[in-house]
Image (tube, rainbow over all chains, first blue to last red; front, top):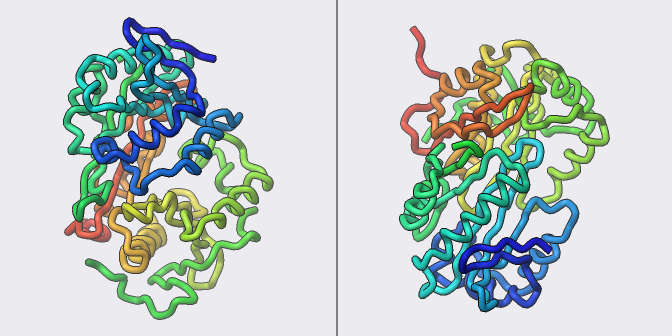
Length: 173
Length: 192
């Protein structure tokens, strides 16, 4: 069981009992808005996803973010891990809106990058952000992620086409 | 929007110098040979030398989804000889984008009329028939010929993914090119 400890947060492995919370967060409009997800998730899909995490062939390494008092406050992890080319994508959600902008995301990403670069020995970590997700753009730029590409008309939502910004951070950036 | 002028029937997709037909199991042997060829294999995402088990596994996997995530074609010349394989891959039916995949079984195929024709037929099929909105292609910097080819076909550079690929002792960038259905410039760039 991998546990990554920060100053105020802990990243621990995902438990089945976290799934209902994750479902509710991912289905909430404030969080769904910034994901490419276009259906509401149910527990069947959540369980399927949870089981896939312990599959030998998984390309994900996911963590539940907890506060020091063990309250679950979010989820984060590395997805699309490519061992040959040593790259992966970032996924990070801080659940409750009232916990946003309190430094929990910053601390979690710090731990995650350290884990990705120093433990998994990745070379390149990707953050894909939709163009209207201004907070995340500022967030990843603060960490030194660089804009590699702008995918035109990548996502259709609310009757319009939107761009996807593909950011990346190289191990020695 | 552009439609390829000479599409006459749906048994085959007919172009001026090539036709697209369904890809068959029997085509995999020659496809394997060309994918393992030492020039071609350094330019693709594949890092293994492929055998027929890999090929058949792939062939099965592209028939798993409905609607399909992969639509592959055999490229033939007008004498019906198989001269290449192409297709639309990673089809996203919600956001209406997919990748173009193409290999023609000869050296310097990027300069050929057949390659140009194949990409035009694929674009036409993607936009005109499948109602795609965006066609994209990822090209590693190991193969400037492909970059030149897709630039000449009026694809637009969207960016460079740094150090995306490890090959032959070093990191390589990949270039992302795309074409939107309403991009004004279409087809081969005019050269004088």
